[in-house]
Length: 501
Ligand code: NAP
Image 1: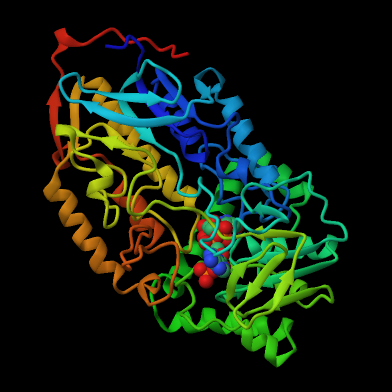
Image 2: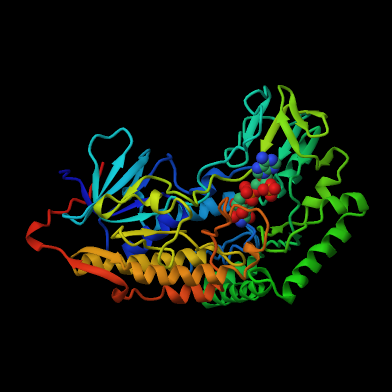
């Protein structure tokens, strides 16, 4: 047996992993390691550095309430600033010694007799053991290149939006962009400024809504610095503003028509050409796919050097993209803004629980969990951004903070009460998920469009069908009655060693 044991192993050094670490520390739990496969922190905000990368949720709300930042430069900050916020937080809370960079966790398995998770790391013969694991690897970590015929034949330059090549000079180049989702609409306005020509290959037009981005003036920053309550008030105002949007975005209601009216008005105002307007008009309910918040996407599409292509892509050729009607669109570079490989029917790494059960098998038709954070049969293991925790209308960080506070309480119980097993009861989990799927049938996400929220069979393992307030409330307390609880045999406990190299 390994002598390398920590109380908590956190897998992933992104927003969720860092938030979990801070809250553990604040609870006086210091024996933890953050395993990060990359060589820097920040997760999706480290990876998404494409030109124009920003968050379409206001920064005041896209931040942790326990780490307010009075200095956000704009209503909606760019990826650089968000990454800076994450790095500052990690430094201020003294997380440095807890990071294990270049540690790619290749699997975890539960040793029931010892009540310990065994964490296997690529290239290391010895596993690390932990009393609890936080799986914070994030849903948007692995890029997805589309399954288009001939993709290997293309001889030009290929760039994925989440792995930007900053050395590539777009000046004077013929560029093709595949995809028109949340990343693409931020990239395209930047590319048209540089490239000789930009062809945008659209499969499905999305709902585009205005995003009014303002610089935060010095007086406001000073106010937030001196009166933190004022900043909290601003955050609350944004929070409830977004909550009200749920009425039109999460469920199909008369307010959905209002959202669609706003989208249509923006289209009419910004696109005068009726043909182009028709090509850009969505044919699904607003909210079914992620809303696109941007003011400069439609104007960029109408620049002289930009062209929207709506013919389906037939294949890639050596020189570019061939569309279904037989035209070859030559390109020096293809930008794939085609999203992420989100595991909804498996697990990001092999997870072996009690009695050798394998979580990927149990999730083969779609992931599920209890309140998105715990899965029966996999004790002392907690998920951030787990099944059915995705927001369609509010800040992901509000959801994440609720998950973190819940899992930190549960881990606190494991350590304080010296528990060997804290395993959510299957009957509670089943009841929770039956309710979840019933509630999802009435949501816009399940109203008939194709999105990364659904499995191939249309099972929604991703989104939470309600208000953020409901989600947060259900995670306010850890009720041990929801769990099978087994105390540790005190004599069998091995000494804990905080340092893991
Ligand atoms: P995405 O939303 O999954 O969009 C992928 C785009 O690529 C879609 O337009 C899709 O078309 C298209 N596509 C995929 N495969 C294709 C193929 N074979 N042929 C042609 N087109 C293809 O990916 P994303 O834009 O990177 O965004 C992913 C998620 O990241 C978002 O939902 C959001 O959660 C997050 N994000 C957030 C922000 C933010 O500001 N907060 C910004 C960027 C990303 P279809 O629509 O037809 O499938």
